[in-house]
Length: 302
Ligand code: NCD
Image (cartoon, rainbow, N blue to C red; front, side):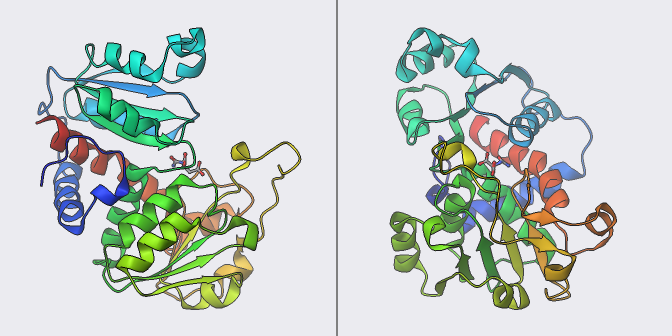
């Protein structure tokens, strides 16, 4: 199967995930390449980003392509003058061969893909989806465990407002994993994702209890409090679940702690533990990102 755009993690079936992960492993061992020489990537970011934008730009440069980077599109591009999303896309698709976009509006990537003559990659559309983060996550699970199939994955924290966990749930629904969703009642995963998971995969559990899950899970995928999607009064940096040396001591010897990053108070580990305990996988996870994004860019552009 060939993707034209990537806007939704439901496009990522196990065949394409495996193909992209193999390609990513090939790229890991290479020096500079010229596969996408002459091609231009535009990164059009209306919301904050460190890893996603830099790793996409790094991926394009490693493949010999070039980049037009707009990290602050909300302030700098004509959006601020009132130009519609459709009109902006209709222009910038003439200037580049692929658009990676992050935008606060739920569904914006789908609108852009419908308008664009070049591939559009959704790097986050509000609190909806972040499919390339799910790709990074799946790739990391494959590298850490050698398979995804029978893992017990616990996703922990603000599931109601996070796009990374929504995309990860969609992607993992296509595997025979066991999924445990851990959150307080007001941070529960929304029904649309739960319905999709239930129609694909029978083993989904929801709980508010963290410690029991930490003892059992293979992957403990932590999430920050998504404050930017909350009202002023509802905003707080407090988190109900924390990985510290105490909770880490409960985890299985071969468990992995993952996180899309940036992490806030939900991770409270001394730096030497983060560096030396093999179970802490989130830095390796972030380092895997350019390779899988190279694979995606090559897939969409060649
Ligand atoms: C995520 C995002 O922006 O949704 N970050 C990322 O791309 N790695 C997760 C987050 O900000 O919580």
